[in-house]
Image (cartoon, rainbow, N blue to C red):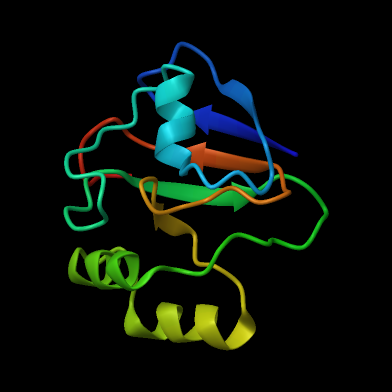
Length: 122
């Protein structure tokens, strides 16, 4: 079980929704279900339009799923993550702050998700 708080200039206030831990729906699907306007185009991890910044809100260890290959390549090409950040994430088993909403699957943790509302911009 997790609480996901969305924060964006597009929202009149932060919105917190409940996400079922272990559900295989992506953060983008959770946002769509709750009418949170995260921009997206391909929904496949190729375009980078759904880039978000994720930070933990609880004292639990951050357990988010590792970067997918597509997510890694897209965020690296867009300049959102460096090779060093990706290597650190892999070595320390700690996901980086920038993710793609169409690839990110929520785990049992409370997170803050920030997005600008502009495709490809956090």
